[in-house]
Length: 84
Image (cartoon, rainbow, N blue to C red):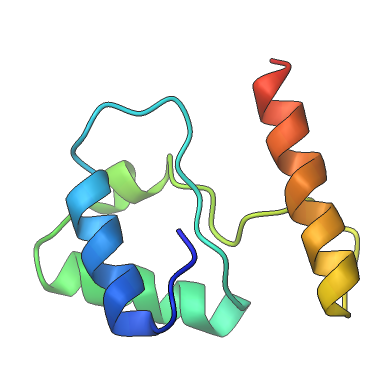
């Protein structure tokens, strides 16, 4: 999930969380992820257990800082998931 703003990310997550999926991830800062989880749980959209299968924030933890590094960390994570 990577939309233009947080409310739209929330909508997409609410739609996707209960659909069958092999992999579901969302881009965002640690703060955004914490806020999103709190909102989704408080709004009754999903439980903490349901959210535990959503990869948030998406990407390998390689201390990426720049946009290029973040993109590489995301692609590396997607390749790892694909090859499982």
